[in-house]
Length: 394
Image (tube, rainbow, N blue to C red; front, side):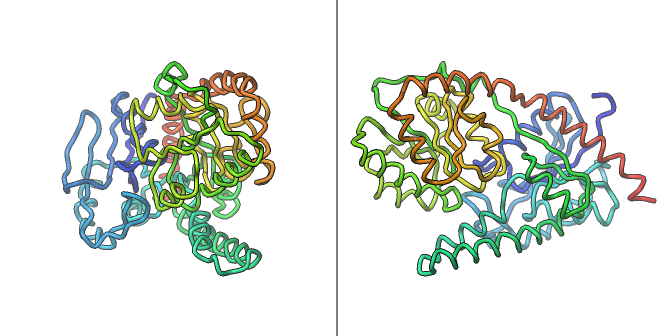
């Protein structure tokens, strides 16, 4: 890209294991490979400022009073002690646009300096935090009747989402990974909002890495083992399988979180690996037969795309972003409700030949998702956003 804008990225998550961090790490590597001038402000083991090629990296160490958010991700209410350091880094770098990635401690710097230094900003949506908040609250309200619990959850979801939009409004351009979110953000912020999907490394996540020595049907799940992922629903699937007299199955569950103990106690035929990475993760995907993803809160569903790339068809819900990755009855299934989800899995387990046909289509569909194209589009949006500078500074 000619005249690529100078971008200052404020990455709320970077080193952690999640889809947003994966996206942001790949984005920085893309800028480095293209030799674009790029500043990345992120958390780090130590506070330091250094360069790697065209990339300037400002690491900020979170303190002991940091509040755990999700796994290794934390929020440091005292991170503002680095305000002058961040300000000086921006002054020296002179960005054309600021990229904020959420509302955690790092992005707060981005919003602050974009506003007070009148630098245009682009905000990318990575996590359905409003739905996470609702799911985590209702998961501890077991004593509340279901109807009341659903009303509480929906109220929390709406309040949090509307609150988030009041902050996202501070960015001049909004990007989200599925069309439903794009429309909602555009409606509530009255800002230009566009679709920005995700990619997958189809050489890394490949059916060629399959190594199996059993004929069991392996039902796979990859992700955080948290209430918002609806992982306890896997028990309902197992109950239906056993009621139908089906024994040649096994769950392969990759991930870590507070629900792991419950799953270990309640699933009869399951292998829980914890977090795994690299080739171990790629082989785990390839060794699955069917990816079962009951989450209703994912904005995109990177893990679903990684499964498809591995030649593994997926069953997903009609809520959230994963359904946009599935061509119903071609490379997977979109279930309208939990009953249909369970019945679909049951029928597929009975028909391994159909799973293989779906798997070939899944691999073919995944090959249309390119990280290169995603980040080329990202820089087009950067350039568009940087063009708003005249209106901001007038």
